[in-house]
Amino acid sequence: MFVDEKIVTLKAGNGGDGCASFRREKFIPKGGPNGGDGGRGGHIILECDTNISDLTAYHFKSNWNAKNGEAGMGNQKHGSDGASCVLKLPAGTVVYDVDTGEIVTELTENGQRVVLIKGGKGGLGNVHFKSATNRAPRDFTPGVQVDAQEFKFVLKVIADIGLVGYPNAGKSSLTDLITKAHPKTGAYPFTTKSPIIGIIEYPEVYKRLRLADIPGLIEGASQNRGLGHRFLKHIERCRLLLIIIDMAGYDNRDPLKDYESLRNELGLYDPMLLEKEFIVAANKMDLPEAKDNLKRFKKKYKIKVFPISCLSEEGIDELKKSLLECCEQTNTELLP
Image (cartoon, rainbow, N blue to C red):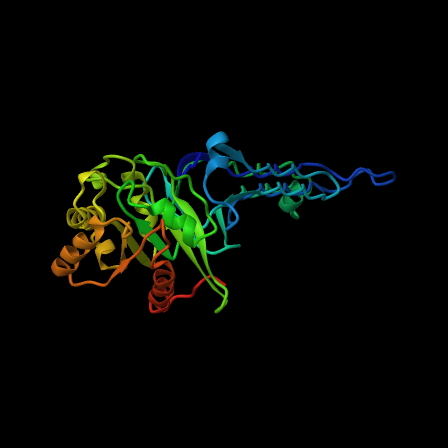
């Protein structure tokens, strides 16, 4: 199960009440006020953790509460603060306020912490209300109560490279070849039903790239058709797009039309996606039909194309090298 959106109900802890008490000791019959303050309620804290891949934990539990602060006690004893509730979220999570629809915060770096809801302040004990004219105050203040709030967690996968292509173009096979991820492959559409993150290793230069295999798009994906519309958001933050085309024209497809349709769907979803750097990989070059189609493709589109075959592994090393070079040219930090 891959969960990338979830509405949760969160409640910070209430503040503890202040205490109204008086000093009671032997031989001191008229002791003054000594009521302590209440403790602060626990916060709701969000923490970014790159070891978490999705929001599955919040699918099974959508209500999270921090602890309440304890009430103050006599002898000016301060009530204990309530324990905070720390919610760990994957990198790339955007938090929305359900009521307003506004973005509250985004988690992008491992270890990043955000106090989403502060706990209620503790109440004051009666020791704070004594004065020359009010030597025996019975006043105190209650702790601040905190209402529950609804938020929407939306995961937008952060990756260096977003791999897009039509079903059966060979995305899962390519991911299996160049990364340590091993997605399911099959000779039928929509084998991959959720984004898969793999790491491309470059041991000779001590670098890595994170590749996101986005589930197959179809025409109309930007209008909520097929699987692709749910996952287009996962390529918004990719620095480079890798477009894989079935150059052999499997199932009577036209590689040129596939390329045009893919670019069109990306632009309809977000025009900014068309401004991203991209590389085209022409897959299935081991089949005889692919060579003629590649000539037509190069004649129409004056762009760099990398002929590859996930079956024979032709051109795979050259593609990996080019992916690293293009990502380095974006002037953003690569994975350590």
